[in-house]
Length: 65
Image 1: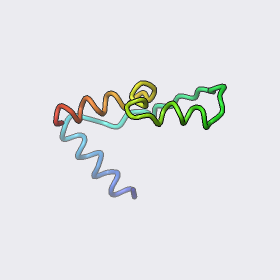
Image 2: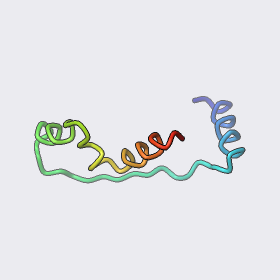
Image 3: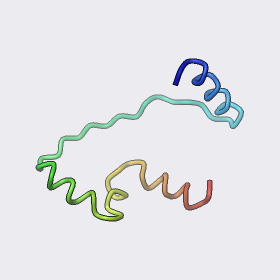
Image 4: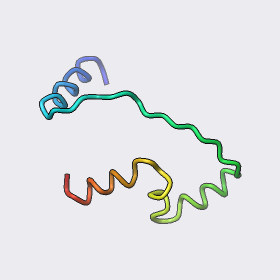
């Protein structure tokens, strides 16, 4: 996204009463082999339990927003 696109994006958000906030970051060390972690989170519906935004995005999508 170049600067002009970013300004347009921010203007579009502003028209809706929204603004960009700070980036959200979280780091956590999982003491397990990557293959074991992948085996758990790749099961259908399982990522919703572990990813901090997945559940919220699904709620919004299901409301039709």
